[in-house]
Image (cartoon, rainbow, N blue to C red):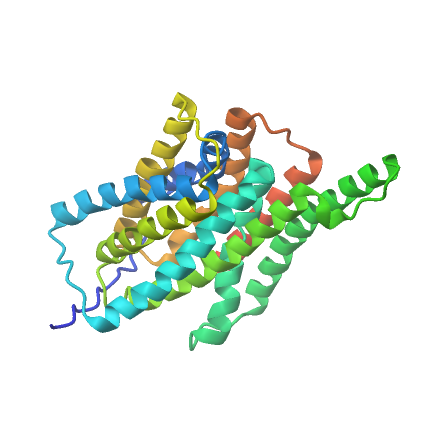
Length: 314
């Protein structure tokens, strides 16, 4: 079987229409964490992931059919996709599980740190993509925002411990565990994107996403059947709507739009729009989930967004 030729990606200047499309995708992506939180009210983390990407796979299958993308794989491609799927499984599980144990606001801020994990991994794994002083400054800004999140967690746990007759370890506090899981998910997301950047050189991006979803859904479903068999399920309109948003809007529409833009414009120019994602995620967390926005959260999202903008522009 012959290997598909690598796609050439454009490097054109982003016009008004493309900028509006990139901002729309970033806005919709910002709703991921709030809708994960809403979906977790009726579905356990692994089952919700299976449902989300099952819906996303149907959207991707329609896009593949419309574009008439060939789907046959050679053994080398299958090995790469298997590794990518393992990263994908762990990243999404940590994201859903962590969001179950922390607020949607905190999840939106912490998952937005994935560009810095990408920059750090590329420094060691991608020749010619080294960390510069400007990137280092941006990463420092963003991680100062992360430290604010954890300082808030530790402070809250300390207040609880002092008010209780029994001293409680801060690591026993649910929100700290959730925050740590989300930060781990951001690291795995960074690693997954680096692997995808290597695989996409020889695979059509839609084909890559089609197979990634197809391989991951049975894994999520099997893991859910094993570890979540006793979990309560409540398919309320809110839960169904949350899964459909994650599957149709994020895993379907946003992925396809971003691939469409990447084929015409440089990743670094498009990446500058991602600084809006944590801002919009926090806003939607307040409006949809009812989270309370504290001054620490506001300062943290400003630092993370500023860090993303600096790193992407570098």
